[in-house]
Length: 124
Image (cartoon, rainbow, N blue to C red; front, side, top):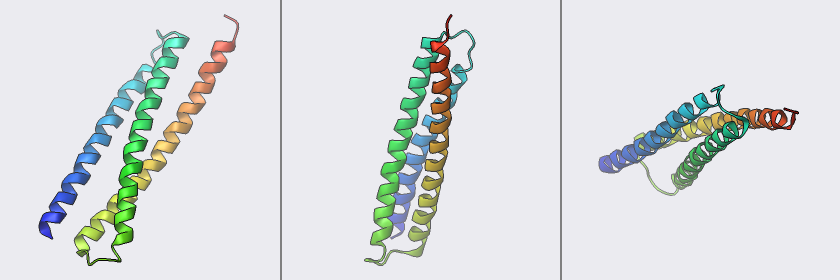
């Protein structure tokens, strides 16, 4: 079972690294949103890029969370070592937390897009 635990740790670390890189890219893109040289349509394109990154992160997190939830459900059917159970439940909690942060980011982006849209409707 020690080998299974190590494989599980590696898989979780790989997914976490992928999500971390996307959050870093998201950070870089949101910096562009504050660039005052951007015109309305350019700012909108950056906002759409941000939205696509958030979507990608959400897909990765939702997929992993679904896999973890399925595995946790099956814990009762098999004897799984405690260390693996603990690791899976910690990862589940982390993914749920990340989902909450993504939802907050999405709401913030939605508000910003409304402001961009409103600005575009104003007479120039």
